[in-house]
Amino acid sequence: MTAVSGRVNTLYYDPESCINCGMCIAVCPHAVFAAGEKAVRLVRAEDCMECGACQRNCPSFAIVVDSGVGCAAAMISAALKGKPMSEGTCECGGSDCC
Ligand code: SF4
Ligand code: SF4
Image 1 (spheres, rainbow, N blue to C red):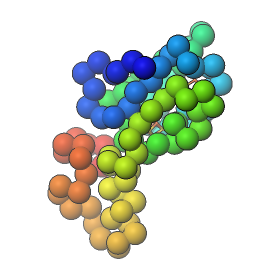
Image 2 (image 1 turned 135 degrees about the vertical axis):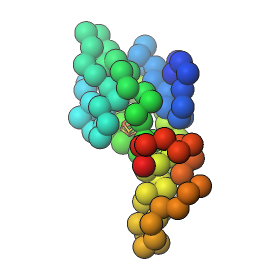
Image 3 (image 1 turned 30 degrees about the horizontal axis):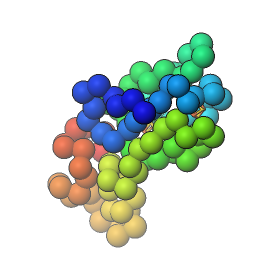
Image 4 (image 1 turned 45 degrees about the horizontal axis):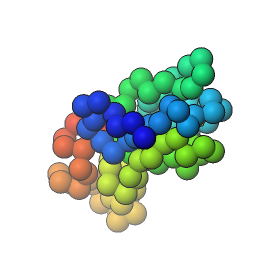
């Protein structure tokens, strides 16, 4: 499994395991992956909001992301509680992803 260089989130992608089905491209709301010749390419890792959709839809377990700690989890949690997201809810470090 290859770690994302300079990573700012928990996203891991292993191109060796990718079968190029394109599901991650289809489900990712932030265009983190792009088409490649033999495997998809991780092109915008820093934009990953850790929603977990790519991992759940990857048939070859080429993607691992901790979807319980990021902005998506914080937004869902805030929505369920009927409250606005407050500072410190998300662990993205204050970037503009949430
Ligand atoms: S976890 Fe969500 S935002 Fe991040 S790469 Fe996967 S689908 Fe895209
Ligand atoms: S969903 Fe998994 S196997 Fe399919 S293209 Fe993305 S990384 Fe590769």
